[in-house]
Image (cartoon, rainbow, N blue to C red; front, side, top):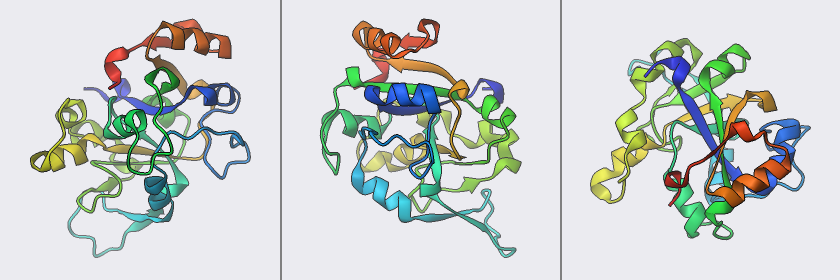
Length: 219
């Protein structure tokens, strides 16, 4: 895996696409935030993230020189792969998800790490689920090491259930956190469930060449 080939993924409801095409992927406190944003996530986890601070330890055990601390809620999170545990809950409901969302209404937004670097956006990344105490966080000084820090086998793992796989589940959900809004031109692709979803994306203004039908990326 080469850094310039690393793609980041974020899922959203298809009804959010027109706003995203105009304003990009926006933070909840952005001046350009979507007043009609349709949520598909776990409200409890969203609330937890909004209040949680994490330390940027760059994977070091010796942190006597002090650590930078960031609030998870101040950043837009991306995953390094598809078919994450969060998607399962979004599709099937449970936990504190308001209602289950059909796969046809869930869209993947794809962004490249190299474009985010070129845009000089501030970012951090983790080697596991952001709220797990075993997870380490890294700043941009470690970006050249990202491909070796992320456990790609865990990210691509199709089975992560059971107590025996808790660490695989943690590492599968490694994150890339971006500060500030992401302009629309940083979105390199849109993934969807079927032809019907593709047609709706096109009618919303998405260029057909940027759309990929990936039913295997859903539960």
